[in-house]
Length: 81
Image (cartoon, rainbow, N blue to C red; front, side, top):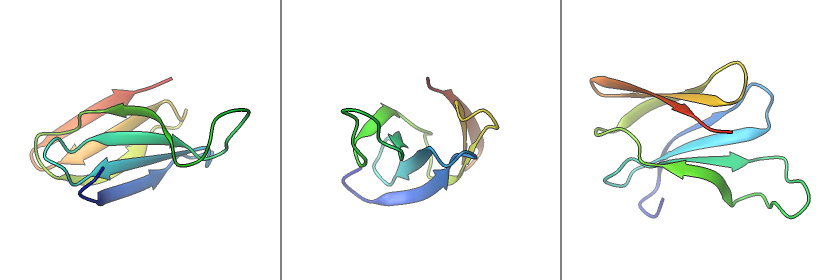
């Protein structure tokens, strides 16, 4: 996430924030927006390689455990827990 953030999306519950990076891998990071115990805001709770092309939109599923990543000519379904 060193080159900047291209897209942001909050989960329906407001507990998570998804971010898509502008780097070559278009990485996706999930941040726990409501810290509990030793977890801190600003540290990703999950990360992964994103789409092959720039991300145009991020949307959470209704259960806060899935992110749909829309990119040029592709769609990714990412599940985290």
